[in-house]
Length: 234
Image 1 (cartoon, rainbow, N blue to C red):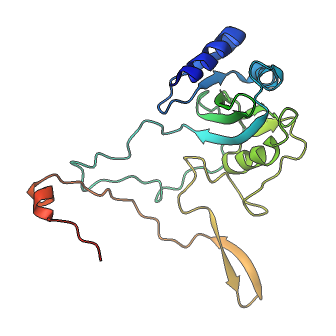
Image 2 (image 1 turned 90 degrees about the horizontal axis):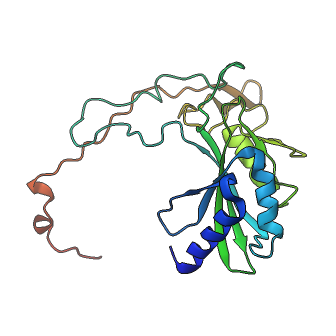
């Protein structure tokens, strides 16, 4: 992290105190976690305070941490096992009384200060609510409009206060949210042309469900660089 980024992180920590929590970065980013109940206040201050002047929201995205940090398989020594996400179709729409892990769904905001030539990332988790909900920031940055609609469409995250929260990328009548980690890889329905009806119709997926098998990575003499010889182009 550069000196300028360290100074920005120090100013934000001093200004907001316990309302924000610093998140370690891996590429020199300045990232803070913000609770949903203070998100709007923090965002408004970051935009309006000349010390920060983050005039622009350049991106907003949803994140599903359902399987974060867990490997699907051990590729070095497992050649006969796999995982069944494609074969065992899970529940696409959870029951109304289902409760999510408080840190499963998050919304990440990328801010830009043109005045100070600085970038900042904010992250807020939705908590255990079903459906997941966070405050809309469209009243602070108008560019949040379609970004929030996209996160709603793909992750099922609701944005409280959004004036027109509709699906943006999926088709009318689409069931579920395709970027959730428990959404089946082959989807729920497929579209095809029905010659008898003379129109496009929806039907259950005809892809044969199967368990995906891992590719085993072997480390033996066959892969020694000296045996591969010089790389030639053309």
